[in-house]
Image 1 (cartoon, rainbow, N blue to C red):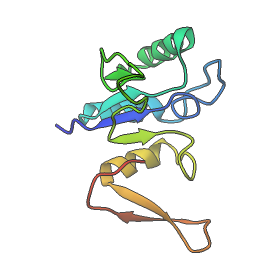
Image 2: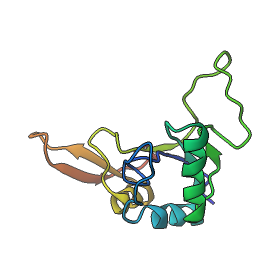
Image 3: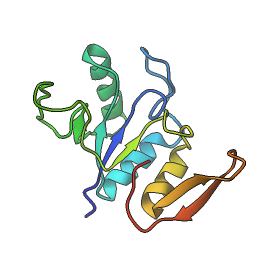
Image 4: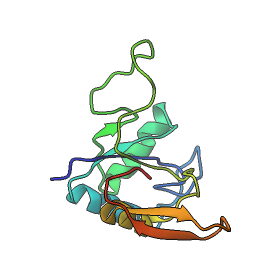
Length: 139
């Protein structure tokens, strides 16, 4: 069992960005997330949303078959105390549409995670090259 934690953004990553509304699911988002869970990855929802808008996002994901290990926290039941801890959550991988270079798509995300593929820029700064990396890394 893998037990790596993946923090996943909601707007623009799992669904199209229609904040404060909920956009259509991104192509293969829920299928990929379900597959990663089946392979032993723990998913944490990591989003700007809070209150009612967060509840709506969680409910939307539940209706699409995704239950999260944590929601805007490092694990279920964690209580954030800004005097004792940083706002950054604990995760091995962060998936967000605002990654350096943008969101590659869920098919690429799955390949990056499971095949441990790294993207790097050509000298012209426009094309990307894939190469295998030995260790585990974040997106």
